[in-house]
Image 1 (cartoon, protein in one colour):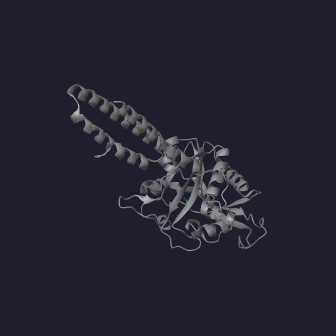
Image 2 (cartoon, rainbow, N blue to C red):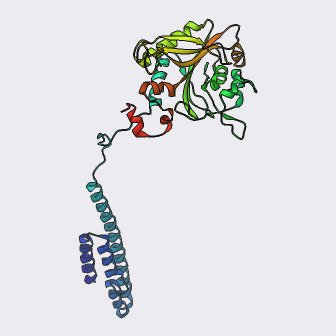
Image 3 (cartoon, rainbow, N blue to C red):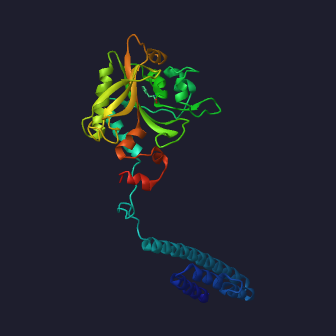
Amino acid sequence: MDELDEMLLAAENDIQNTQTSDSLGAFYAEYFGKNGKIAEKMKIMKDLAVEKKKEFGMKMNSLKEKLQSLIHDREVAIAEAKLNKRVQSTPTLDLTIPSTEKRGSLHPITIIQNRVVEIFTSMGFTVEDGYEIETEYNNFEAVNVPKNHPARDMQDTFYLDNGQVLKTHTSAAQNRIMRKYGAPLKAIFPGRCFRNEELDASHENTFFQIEGMMIDKDVSISNLIYFMKEMLTRVFGKEINVRLRPGFFPFVEPGFELDISCPYCDGEGCRVCKHSGWIELCPCGMIHPRVLEMGRINPEEYRGFAFGLGFSRLAMMNYDITEIRLLNSGNIRALSQAGIK
Ligand code: PHE
């Protein structure tokens, strides 16, 4: 019987000294294998007297259980030690260390959009979202462009099988916003627009606009001029003058093309403004009474202005990009040459 105690003691010692799961496996086989130490010891059983047999059997069982539990514990300890070692030897990743690679930046369109949005929100406008897939009604009818109106020609777009369209202008959100908030209302809504265009250096099938709308009891063209002048002066960081020329859009009456004094030559005349001192920037006008009506706003009581500013144009001017297709090209080298760091 003492032999068994001795065996247990020796085994315990061996288990504690085992350092790898492989050697622990070998140890297991040495004891519990078919011809292992335990099987060997069991051979004595058959020569023992009945009572002794029972006692011996019980002792063997408890020895086996003890060994198994020790082996299990050791296995867990070895696995933990291995993991700790790996964790300690892995260099920690510090995400705050500045990269040695060229750093990324926001897209020129996003930079301009953020700036314009910030300026308008500081003047009390809310920022609304528009859909990129719109109903034909919202894109055309609700802004006074009925079916077969020639103005649809200028805004040919992509029609989906379900009859909806990729919106051709941010004006597509006018009706939904009017019905949602009613008057008075001051909102801007930036968004991506699509047109079925012949592509060239200044025409792209996907481009960005920001629409603005202000509706109240005595809104006039002077309010429109004030907000545009203020916004553009802040965008360009210098005093910008604006002028209005008549322009036609079915959803405004009167309608205008807004020109800005050339920010590059301050109106002196240069390559960018084609020596005229002015740059055509943004269509706008007083919202047509029918459009207000369709937006459930009483045109007898309320008036408003709307403008649709092309971001793509603005970004090109700001960063001296001469080719509109670059903006959607994902060409990082070209975009960084545009002065964006
Ligand atoms: N939606 C017009 C366009 O994209 C621009 C516009 C907006 C004109 C608001 C007048 C008023 O061509």
